[in-house]
Length: 89
Image 1 (cartoon, rainbow, N blue to C red):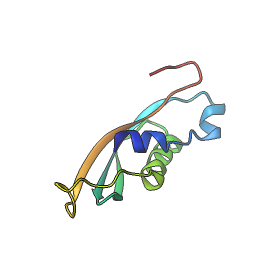
Image 2 (cartoon, rainbow, N blue to C red; image 1 turned 120 degrees about the vertical axis):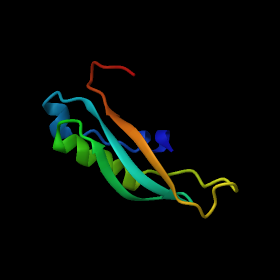
Image 3 (tube, helix red, strand yellow; image 1 turned 135 degrees about the vertical axis):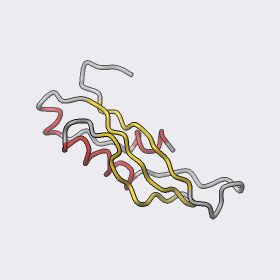
Image 4 (cartoon, rainbow, N blue to C red; image 1 turned 90 degrees about the vertical axis):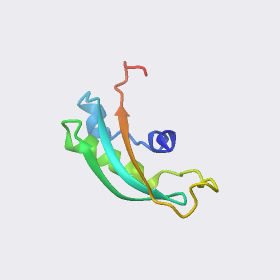
């Protein structure tokens, strides 16, 4: 789930141009491969990055739920990272 969100991140051009980087902690509910009720738990300190983190949750292609979790709502809290051009994970 974490890699699906991080893989869906689109680094905003305005943030890139301003050489911004950071991370936003988001929470969301996940049920049967679909996310809902996403919100920011810990801001990156920049509204543009926070909005991009929420957008990534909404467009991510999540894996299907395993049989053990089918039909259950799971709540996730994950960090979404925005790395600058010269930064590496």
